[in-house]
Length: 120
Image 1 (tube, rainbow, N blue to C red):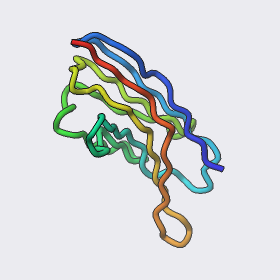
Image 2 (spheres, rainbow, N blue to C red; image 1 turned 90 degrees about the horizontal axis):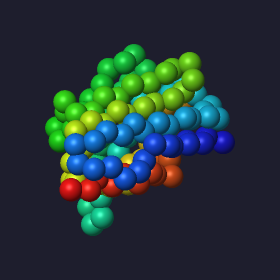
Image 3 (tube, rainbow, N blue to C red; image 1 turned 180 degrees about the vertical axis):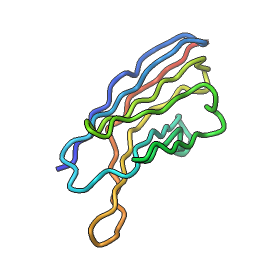
Image 4 (cartoon, rainbow, N blue to C red; image 1 turned 135 degrees about the vertical axis):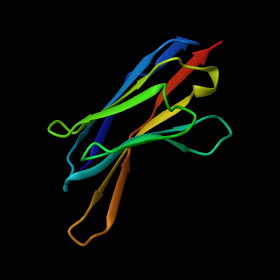
């Protein structure tokens, strides 16, 4: 049973920093992609950042230069360092992992979400 345990959310003032972490366990296959998504009230869930097992990263334009995603393949953990936070970064942040099965299907799992609130 795949489990994703997130930590690190909270309340921070604009301009501050937070570090989100996610630990995955129980994965039946090698985890190919690990990432973070967010969903603000009344909005659709959107990609924040994703990192492949080889270290290739992709960021949403809105967080480029302010966020850094990293992962530890041995520990199946992914972290998101967020700096210069803005009120518009306020959202529930979800950890996501993706993997390819032996049958070449794509499996994806979500964490329970962690709230990030940035006050102005």
